[in-house]
Each structure stands twice: as structure tokens, then as C-alpha cells.
Length: 362
Image (cartoon, rainbow, N blue to C red; front, side, top):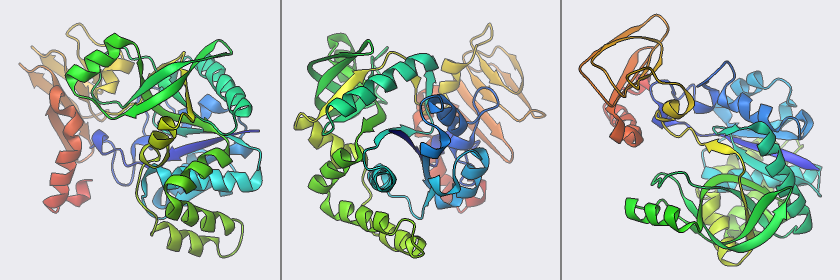
């Protein structure tokens, strides 16, 4: 049966100051009343019921996650005692789910994506589940046909067609490529042999755990020891002790790159629109602009102001005069002002604030 595993452990520093240590990005709403985390669960709910939905988050966010998702069993909200990137998270989720359902198929989703229309997402998931059952030793991922030469995304190089399921095209994967420079990104888009790497996966637990054991045996052993303690009185202690020693590495480096080289990865060409909501410029893509191409959420008065993203608390007025292409974000006791071409470097500012001993604003 299909299980959903949602990764919700990131800090979302690029959304400072709205995203803080106590309120990471997945708990924020960027359009409407539902948070990114809730929208992720909503998106898969028609195919996966709450009793087969799992969320892995930071231990500090476990209570908030459970409050946002009261329909989930309490035991299905797993709080990681330390941040160890996505390989440990994915491996643990697969191992725990396998204990409850050895023949499970798992869809792994980050908690901070926007996908539309949902019906097309459902069609793609159905196709991926079908392929996973036909090829239980394969790892499946979703690739997004690029719409512009982005240097902020990783890419998937295609090796040839693998047929269609539910009208969704599948391809073999030649390689996973890191974020390219401008010239390379333009070449990828023009060549038509690369897709954006969406970081959404579908697989059998044995397939991903087998690859993890092959490439990162120590990490796989750590995950196995934690999973063996699942449901026992010793679980919390074993989880904390073992997880803190786990290698910090992404699932892309730990598993997907080598599996791709070995011909064990299939990619489905996503038929839906996708946004990873990776920075404040995502608001431009998700919301309408005024006549001067400003994207505004909050109270704003601008004179000779164009192409800006302005966000503020409801009763806080932001006034701008003679500026363009700025990101201006006010939230509570902090305000960010940055040029749009530097929006991907907000983490540098967060690090500088921390170095100044001003962690109370983070």
C-alpha cells in the first residue's frame, strides 16, 4: 500500500525574518490560510489516508507539527533529535514504515513545495506507484521540465525513454547534476535532455535501504538499530544516542547519484506545475503584481516604486520612495531589505546576525 513520508525538518533561513528558529518555513502560509506543511498533507490525502502518512521533523517542532496535523496518529510525527540532512531522515522513515508494512510503497515529499493542479499530481503519483510495483528494485523520482535556465536547482540528465504510465512519460536517468552556472543552465534547457530535480521520490523500502547499505553502510546500520527499537520503551534513548552519531549527508549524495550511474533510477516527467518556494521571490510567482510590478502582502504605500516584493505585518506600514527591485520584509521585531539579485544569500545575513550575538532575532 502507498505510504506518504513528509520531510519537515528544515529551518528555512532564506525566509528570515518571517521564518525563525521557533517557526520554520513549513509552518508559514504564503497564500491562503493553510501552511506549506498542511498543503503538502492535503495534496496527498486523496491517495494516502492519515494512518499511512508520516512526518519527520525536528524534535523541537514535533508538538507544533502534531497541532497542525491533528488527524495523524501521534506516533507518525517523528521528531529528529539532531539535524542530519535527508539521507538519515529518508532511511529512518523507510525502515520504520517497513516494520509496519513490509510491502509498502513510499512517496517521499518535502513539506515546502507548491504543486498545481492537484489532479495532475495525483496522476503522476499513480504512475510512479505502478512503476515501483513493476520494478521494485528501482528508485523513482520526479523531474520538472525546466521553464527557464535556473542556476538554483539541481538537474537530472536523461538517458532514454522508459515508456509511459497513466499518460506520464518516464525516462532512464544518466546522472544527477549539481546546480550549474548560467551558461551550463542555458545549455541544459536548450538541449532538452535535462529536468529539474524536484526532490520527490517513490520507492519500495527495500530498494532505498539496500542502496543506502551499499553506499553508506555505517549510516544504514545506525538507521537499522533505531528502527529495531521502534515501538519499545527504549526507543527514545536509542533514537537520540544513535541519531546524533549519524553521518550528515543528503539522500542525493548518499544514494541517488550512485544509483543513477548504475541505471537504477527512473524519472517521471512531472505533468504539474511546481515551485519549491525556496526564497522570497516565490511570492512573485504565486501572487499577482500591481501596475508597477510590485508584489505586496501587507500595508504599503509606494511612490516611484517598481518591481519590489514588500511584506509586512497587517498594522505595520511600509513606505517606499524611488526604489526598484528590492525585497522588503518586515515581521515583528526584524526587517530585511535586500536587492532581488542577492535574495539567495539571506543565509549569509542570518549567519552574520548570529555572529553579532543577536540570536534573539533569529
